Length: 222
Image (tube, rainbow, N blue to C red; front, top):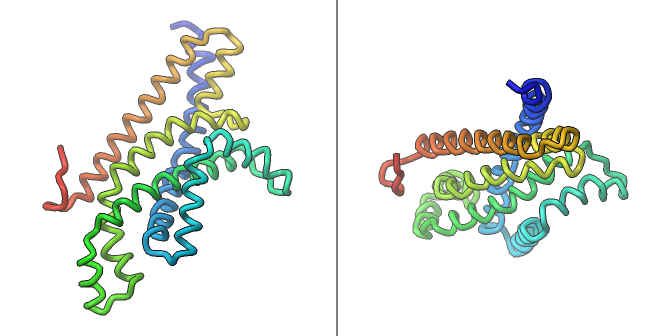
């Protein structure tokens, strides 16, 4: 095999793959949790909380992720807040992913029939108990396809981390390509790596969705 692949490209992109996983996994988990919390606040919070959460969602869905990362890494030091490149990337990915996930969760929460809320109140359950034990479990199952799709997007837009000097998969390939001028080979390999990550994530999400499936609660394809 060409030494370019065995001695330069593959070792570099394997390092980048590890960094990408370090960025993606915590961002995906925290983004999901944040989305659930924000979605619940947007549906069941008081008027002030709803307005604040709506503003957060509009802000992070409306401002390009690249701009958000620049602000977190280059802008926050102006007010005395310093983040390492990986930290800034994880914070940015989490906030952006949480905003999109909150939309999926909000839609799923609104789809739960009001009769269930009244039945829970008739049984003496508080609003918090009703939301936690009755509404959220059902809504999460309905929001899962959308939230899972957001994980796929997160894998792909994690490639923006290199713009704030966090050298992940794309950053490593870009460095090798700039040094050797073999851009086609470098980015074809990177594309294959991202396709592998997305395929694995899609398979895991499908298994998770099947695991949470309740007979009669929607339709699931094998």
